[in-house]
Image (cartoon, rainbow, N blue to C red; front, side, top):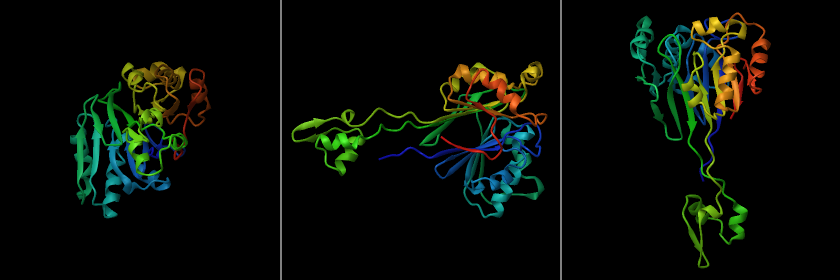
Length: 304
């Protein structure tokens, strides 16, 4: 019987613009069973990976929101470290338009040529990538360069099998359990037993939405609707709203409004400006609108 995947969210860097002692620049990882998906790869991401519970050699797919340095400058070092550890498996990199041109210039600096395939794919908004047990969809964001947000969706799982009810109905343990859990009807003592009588309704897969850098926008609200987790640009506090919008960023308060409208379960405030050492202000402003808001620490981990 298929079981739900183990999914863990790891914040590798929660800051924006440039690293400070308290926070590295943007990168998050999703560990889905044994695979690690990387979303953005700012300077120092490989060291953050080495300080986390994750193995950088398990990263097979990298999703870039846009091509500003605080989101991509860690990629070259990460690939070189993989190479020096005898990687052979391909790395797939996805991003907005111009990703191929920019990354080819960055990756092959210093006479480096990877000994493994590096595949670069440029995505259009609404492009959906199906990886079997989960998918990743590119969503249009509102920043001052071509930018994507990403929606991770776990495939819906079959309903729970009620073993006690099956036994009470005379179904013996063994192959018939598997057959009815696959959605097939069975016959016991001339009585047809349908799967709906023993198997509960399908369980919705987990949804994680990562905005990257963006102003609040309807595309994100719609795509993130009822996600388990929303990770949203929260660069500045509410007193700097005009500056945030002028530079196509969001405040913590704006991120909370997005979370409220999207009816998500939890909001993580992300891409925090280096000006903030005390994060209470941002978190308090967000919680006034959306109670389950939090500024995560670098290297913090959350199981879904």
